[in-house]
Image (cartoon, rainbow, N blue to C red; front, top):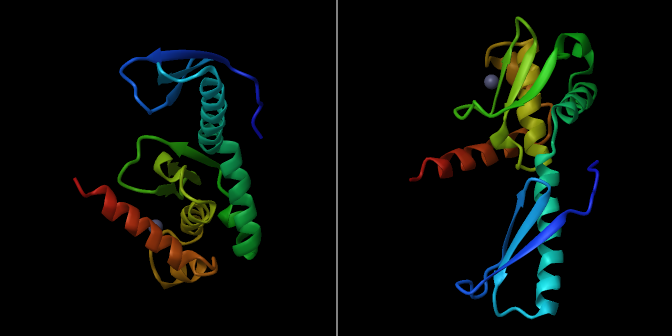
Length: 173
Ligand SMILES: [Zn+2]
């Protein structure tokens, strides 16, 4: 749930711009860059459009640690109910310093970290990455017991395929 406050908008016209419009947040303000030849009507139409686009983008990024923990609790209820206490993490956090892995966990202190690179992915992929780490709290290694737990999530295979696709694309220079 985002608190929506109408931002202060600063429109900058550029003679170099022909058709492209862009917008970014600068503190409390939103700067919208438009071509100089835009009419007032086009300007106001594009400001509205860019504000909506920015809000949508930020809404996705607003996936917080608290939301991640709530998501983990729901996944435990759905897929690991008999492991309730064993699978319950002490903390679940988004981290930006983890580029090689989608998620990681430390069974000793029951902490889970999920890479910010997963933040923009579909919910069902985030759920898979999270469930994978929750299952590691029960079974640390990638053995048959572990994969049996993960397979309870119906979209495990698809999510793994999705992540492999992203990883393959990311390594293309
Ligand atoms: Zn794993």
